[in-house]
View 1: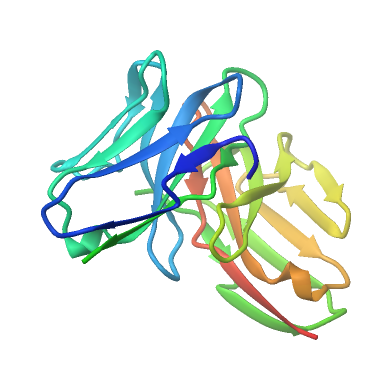
View 2: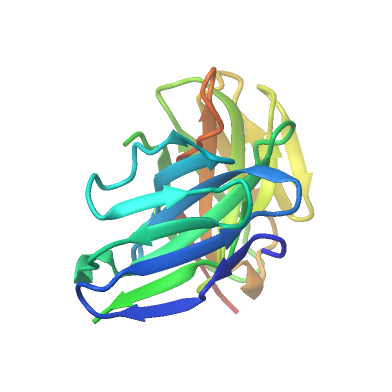
Length: 114
Length: 112
């Protein structure tokens, strides 16, 4: 998973707090994708972004969740007023503008809400 | 949301055996991808397929893009303990943006 950097690796939040998850894509990649994975389950698509644009957010919950990918800096997935059900592994992936459609994934952020 | 039909859901095999798993869809795909996820890590791309009928190998792994463009399989020959993990298929619909559609994964356990 070298190249896509996610931090923090582990994040513990109390119910009602905010969680901010960061993702720096591979060098030269301009597309970023966020996925959520519950234990023993597959990957659930959340949102697809390009620089300064949200391309597809069909997998994002309507409330409390937001994502951005600014012109400068990492992509941020923000979860406000976290609840226990938000506990999961959140993976970020990136892909280049052209060519291969294969994503490169980061190692994920494991969010635990207590 | 849309999902691929991936089977089997899990497999428990002896070291040295060959393994086969597949994914099917009711839709036509432009691209098929196979990933492996180790515990506590993100998925890693194993093989990418871009043309119907394409057969591609990566070491002991072989994958094929079905001729109908609605299915793909992954074979692992002579399995070893480090093959343990979850294998995911993913595909990109024809004419779609870069968003991938995913299978639910095949969990592989290898008995040494």
